Image 1 (cartoon, rainbow, N blue to C red):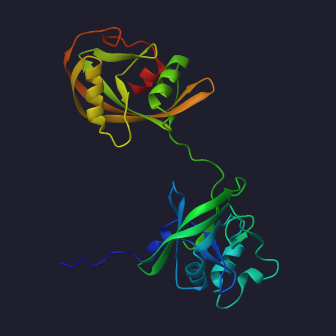
Image 2 (cartoon, rainbow, N blue to C red):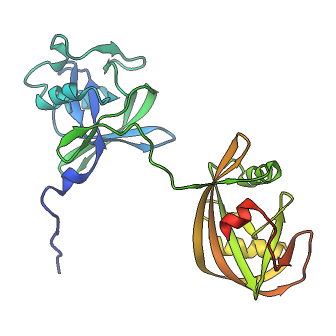
Image 3 (spheres, rainbow, N blue to C red):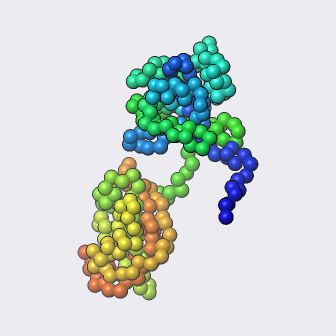
Length: 301
């Protein structure tokens, strides 16, 4: 049975996008158009996709295999309206006096728009028809940004500004000792966020702790991207002499670990676990009826 789409009217207006002023130059003359669907699709190499229709912009790209992406700043709404309100078959938009201030690109023969939040010079790597648009993907061979500029946002049929105030990450700030910070940074192996699996193992009123950086903490291990958290934690527990069954997720603790001016973002996924065999070893792990005072331990418990 063929399922018919169940899509509310105007649902597309509830996406939020930046606006790319796409610049080209070719047989159809120098041109600029507004492309709401302009986005980065790869870090390395840096690939940028634009979604356009058959137009002077597309014809120039098809001919020259290069284009400019100028992410409009929030004080360029008028430029965006002009670039999007007329076709290059109607007027030469870049020639309107006192409107588009441009400069010559470094590596491609394309005009670039001044005062944008970001500017990238791209060479085409792929062109493909996608639904009712044509997707053009370009590799950025030169790119720069203006940290004083904020990108223009289009949503719900209007251009809007991003709030200058940051949204709280919701992370709890936890003070750790310099020794702990050194240990966690060593364990993180350069990861932007320290992501660990943590075992919460209790026996009556006692809890099993592991020694780390001179402090007692819950047994934990850094988990590599893509690795299974339960398996990684099981292997770690065995490495410190604990035979245990890792159970269900107990919770997640998101923190910013701080020591002096140093800080490290950390996510701890905690698992309820049950010990089947353990010989107490105060060099690695031990049972505690009364956990030692430790800000990290207190935050996790």
